[in-house]
Structures are given as C-alpha cells and as structure tokens.
Image (cartoon, rainbow, N blue to C red):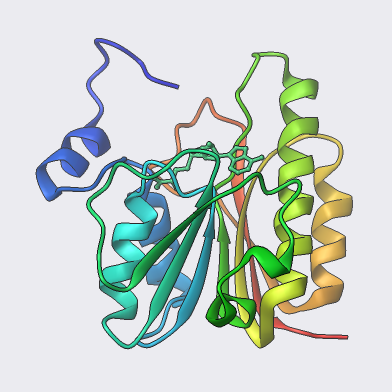
Length: 197
Ligand SMILES: C[S@@+](CC[C@H](N)C(=O)[O-])C[C@H]1O[C@@H](n2cnc3c(N)ncnc32)[C@H](O)[C@@H]1O
C-alpha cells in the first residue's frame, strides 16, 4: 500500500538504482541469506508485475540463465534478453501454457498478492489461496533439490501451510525482510531442497 507523504527510503533507493519497485529489497535480503538464485539458473517469478524481481533475477542468473515472469499485468520494468513474460491468471494456469524450458526450473518465486480489502481474515484467505496455487505450480515444475520462495499474509491458515511445505522441502525458513513494512502482515517462507514425490 502506498503511503503518500511518508518518506520511504526503500522507494527512493529503488528509484535511484533503476528498479521498478521497492519490493526488490525483500528479494535481495532473502537472496543474501539463502542464495536461492545461482548463475545460469532457470527461474519462474509468479506475480511479477511491475518487474523489480525480474530485473534482479535477470542480473543474478546472468546470460546463461532464464527467467519467466507470470502475472495478470505486463511488467513495466525494461525487458532483458534472458526474461520472458506470460500474461496469465495463476489460478487457472496449466503447465502446457509454459514455454518448454520453464517446465523444469531451479527456482520458483511467488510475490503474488491479492488486492487487499483491509479485512484481515479475508485478505489472509485470498493470500493463502494464491500461496497454495504457487506451491501447486512449483510442484509441477520444480527440479528435485530446487528452491521456493512464497509470500503469505499471516493468519490462521499459515501454520498448516508451513507444515505442508515442511513435508516437501528439506529445509523451510520464515523471513520478514527489513524492507517489508512492519504494519503489513506479509511474511515469506523459503523452501530449500525440493523433495519430489
Ligand atoms: C506485490 S506485486 C509483485 C511485485 C513484484 N515482485 C515486483 O518486484 O515488481 C503482486 C502481483 O501479484 C499479481 N497477482 C495477483 N493475483 C494474481 C493472479 N491470480 N494471477 C497472476 N498474478 C496475480 C498482481 O497482479 C501483482 O502484480
């Protein structure tokens, strides 16, 4: 949510550094800690508009890697040779819609977020639905050993979702990056070492 008139150092930094959104610093912080993205990696970025994660992924995976962004809305960030975009609703996305190279990826990222209403339980339910869809997508396309990052608004469905992740990844961690606004109920779950079964 925008906060007109309130000075936001991350927004100013994003503008200065040429990123399309302040959200990039959440991914950067998580990357510093967990090294999800490697040079040459294939990455799917769910909920990619306006595109700051695409920008960072593109730089990090380099020319031998590839990034597919998926969103209802096209990115506004400048494109790059190793970035592709698919306009789609994650709730109805099928594996066949993906370009062949994106059907087996090293990392799935999801910054998917519903339009918030301010009603906590409802926003949580909608976020949980998107997080579940992100996990379902990841299960269809992640290589064994792959990494997963998913945003979720906290609420009563959070613990069961985390327990589900714990059965599918060797390690699961929870992060609230410094650039995530303290009043926001969003947190990120990181799954490392995908166990395919
Ligand atoms: C917080 S923004 C992502 C910001 C992005 N990570 C960046 O750094 O620029 C969340 C995105 O989720 C997308 N989204 C929400 N519901 C979706 C759905 N059902 N299918 C695809 N994208 C969806 C929204 O359109 C929005 O662009």
